[in-house]
Image 1 (cartoon, rainbow, N blue to C red):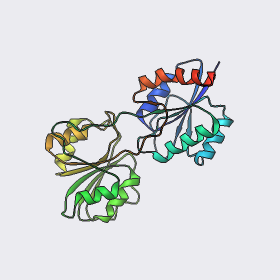
Image 2 (spheres, helix red, strand yellow):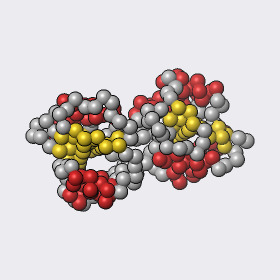
Image 3 (cartoon, one colour):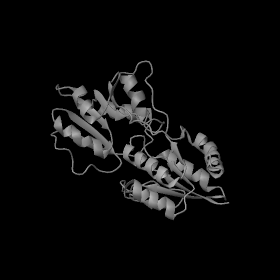
Image 4 (cartoon, rainbow, N blue to C red):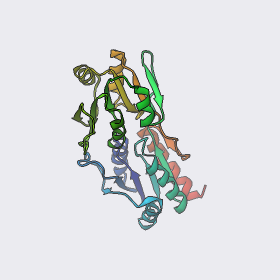
Length: 254
């Protein structure tokens, strides 16, 4: 029997999982991307780009395409997409699996301050001018226009358009992985004294935290959203092991 799997992607792990599953003859895999990145990385399976139209639209797609399993492998901070996935799965009875890489945890020498959102991060930076590395998505950086006294180093995959309405900002384009040596060079070159980032987990962007530890730079870390209450895997290998289990359980009606 052939099963059709839809992976909601946009992460390295989604691409890796899709490639591993695509090697199987009993599965047909489609990867869905939000379409926000102008030049997404090459993918190993057919790609669907763009939104579904909320949970109802996703549910209609699951029914129309005869999807046997929905895998949410979106970014840990894509809370709205994940919530829609849970709702769509409930509406259709399609089993859902969440691939969510493990969060980073502070180690000896780290100076982390965990905050709820970008507004909290602004308050944590304070009023005294600082030199801040914003390692955030395009949707979050706009909030920092409300603190124009700081210098901002902003890194993103695509250009920030329009640029922030602040007097002193430098924009760097880049796609991970980012190694510690390169991050040390970047932080030193711009005399960074604070970092604001998300707890994305994984290894691709952990280099900046290693560099911050070496340079004794404080890190303002945006807390992850609450996790959806669905079966979860924290690695591609674990997700691969769970796929057959979830499909078998659904077939038995468990």
